[in-house]
Length: 158
Image 1: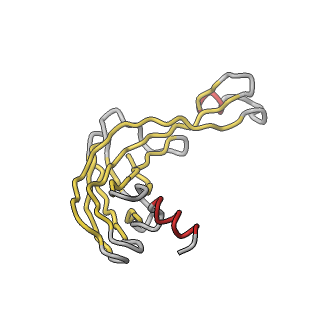
Image 2: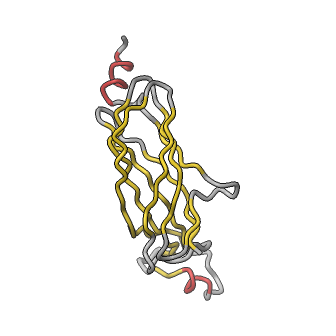
């Protein structure tokens, strides 16, 4: 076994992978504020068996804002009111609005697949999905002995 193979094994980089199943429009979940986002997560085994303790689910809201280069930040609505926006640079704020842990407690064999249905509450104060506001479902697996894989799915809040 070469040095790079030993390093990959030590870091656990050849372990399990995650995938969030989406619908035909690319959304992992469709939900109203105050509802529950539901999705299906597929855990794919890597080159060695993985013990999946749990999946950690996070709902993250991102809002687009604009910076004028002099330290002033404008909301998307404020930026639209300007005649000349060429000096503005887009940026995104990020806010964690909900988190849940789904216990799995299962072993995933080499190159095997295991599907897990998950759900996480979306608070009533969560903003609706727009071109300047995105809502994401971040899923992270808690797996012993490897770097915890993560995957992101889109949530349509309407």
